[in-house]
Length: 145
Length: 102
Figure 1 (cartoon, one colour):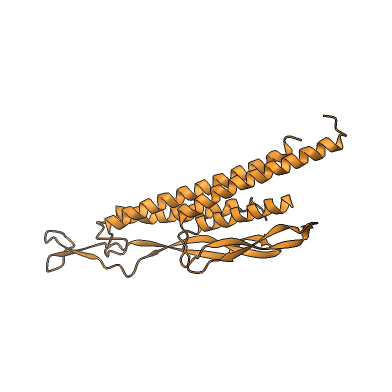
Figure 2: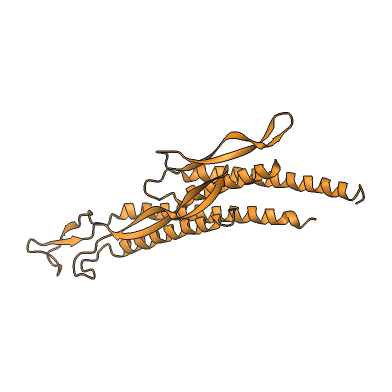
């Protein structure tokens, strides 16, 4: 194993950030959706990232192969986020007391997530770039023979 | 000796990349490379040994992107410096192989 397979690690990291971006933008876009596909109030999406040792990139460390975990994102609906109750008696989806259930999407948290996603993606791109430079420099050893 | 050092630097880079990629992984604690022994097979007379690295997890320590990127940049410079040394060694060997003629 060398530097080549570590490029896959960076792309897995970018995939994770893309999944987080998709979930965050869907949550922001649906922050006032009172009728989702099931007719109920929209439930925010959440991304759970797990390190998969099965797909791990192996490295030889002192003769002992070490499995480095590859991040894998799975998008789930957040079950424990309570909907916001907003008083709006004129709304078609208001209950008999005049309250409408809006998704529990916190705009401030969503914006913070976007910043964190952007930084994370950037870091993975940068890491990819550094790996590419190192590989290029290694190949250049053969150029000046 | 030099190639061992290049290998160690490449291993360090792999570990930094892994930490950056797993920055949002649940329950992940960062990995690092420790150099705790000098491999005996690479030993040169005078007790100079080649470095041998080992990947270990640091339990309970989350990934900090800024630290990881700084360490990665530092290691990349070291890697390239080592490649320069390899190049210089190869140049000297080439010079010798051509019996001093250019």
